[in-house]
Image 1 (tube, one colour):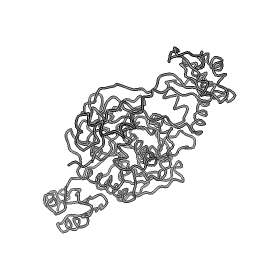
Image 2 (cartoon, one colour):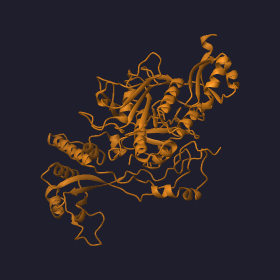
Image 3 (tube, chains in turn orange, purple):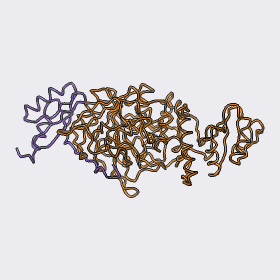
Image 4 (cartoon, helix red, strand yellow):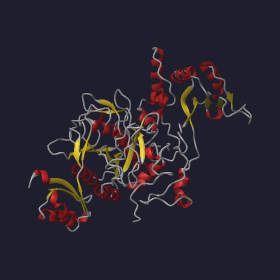
Length: 471
Length: 79
């Protein structure tokens, strides 16, 4: 049957990883510096005075100037420099000092030609030169090099947050605490006062909030009294006989935090993606953490009835190698998708890598359900993360942060840091909500759009299309 | 009927036929738990020995056993 049920697959998805390309860290190790308007003429001497850096002015540089030179671009008030750790510190101090006209410092990114537009516009042309598409009528393998997302938005909030966090980092330095300068991750994390997961998925750069989008989280419920969610639109229902929605486990509250946490939680770093989304809490797992398919499907049914565009399910059970997916869940997911509801589920935590890679579990192994794997802040697959061992829907579609994920937890603990494909899943759900808001896309169209915007990593078996990206 | 013989099942149907099939299941002695019309699923409880009969009910596309999902305890580092 030619009906499109599943997601587009990346090139080389033969279940054993394509082994191509290796790791793309995405950064060059150099830094972009911005100067206040009108101060560009002083830029070179500022860099020398503050950080001992020699830089060539672009006006003076000839065509033979090496691209690796420190360079000041007077016309646009920017510079690109290589800086040793103590020079980096000096530059950060200069940024934090409002009397110095150096305003911003960020890591230089590697940029490829944006292939995405071509792939979308000429998709069928590209596919015709490739091997025939696999079953499930996924759009077909796409020959795209790792396409990085378009440059992020530098809003005033971004710059303010960046500067404030740099000041904080500097005061830590002056106090004798020397934070690890494992640039760029630590630099950005310090700068943005947000979890590493929101950094690396570029949620911070997104202009969207998920406003107008309903995200259903089917889990152990929620701490409905958590202070970070005051004022949010929350609709809830329990599908566990004898138990209220109030989360007596913690898992549900954590997942809701990751997918929909606030933009500016008081006293702590940002940890949530879709801070403007409407939160639909379906308690399908008991306070003891267990639930049956019947209750879970009732939760999905409720979410579809309520026109939730995204359903996040950080739950599942192990399957055997070659075990087929649940036809009931697949039918339900397909019908839901046709009605504009996209379901995302955790790939599962049964692996014990490197020795044992377990197959993606139920129900994430359904072709029409987005299966999310977990990675850590170094972009390594998490030890426990299930892989695309089984075909026929059992592929990993996408990967997201799933190791040491900070998010909300029932009071009084308030926050917790845990790991799991359970944490990666709501991150993808929140990002899908951002794109749903931005594009108006729904269902499989939304999913395929977001899959293709992800940051390709080395193993299709472990990461699918790669690390989810919000912009 | 021994409790040990009963199990939770899922029945897939066309959404538009959900109510009708649920009635037919009840007439066949099956306990219908939920009729999920939006997504074409009926959850039910029946004896293991009744599964074949359930499959034969007109409009039933598929019958499956329900799985149980279990999370680690709240203090587990991996969730």
